[in-house]
Image 1 (cartoon, rainbow, N blue to C red):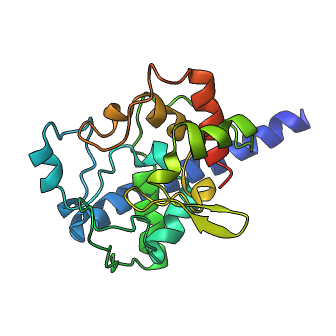
Image 2 (cartoon, rainbow, N blue to C red):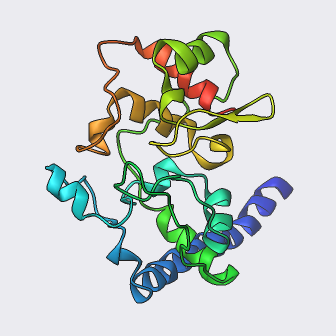
Length: 218
């Protein structure tokens, strides 16, 4: 009986927590709009770009699947203190990224992060990938399908790799491992016009899982 009463007592608290999350997300959506974040980032999926012209017209990355891609704690912190992830300017192959992304106050960042975490993709299956360093994933990443040719990563305290793609330094705290796998399996679902190679048909899904697990340890 005591357990039942205790559980019943928790229900209002859980309801309030759920209501608070909803309120934060609604407030975040309003802040996102007021600050014209959608001037650079669109939040309604699926992907809109169909041609290279569409891609070049974009000012920043799409966010319609942000809740599937990012980890909430990282997103909240990044919105307060944005750090460069793309070493080259968006849509550029040679111009350095000047940085300067707008910062949000802590209360605003929490609300916008809550809003962005509601934006998800059905193709990202939860619980498929757990972060795990593994020889096969590392070998594929570094040599077989050299992801390191385009993406920076940290290895034994050194920053290695290319600059044409987003940096993967700290990817373990930034990216959802299940999204990494979904992106490897079908990048066109998220970015129809892209430079990312298509691995389907070249790699087995279990090997993609190993790569995703490896990247999730960065």
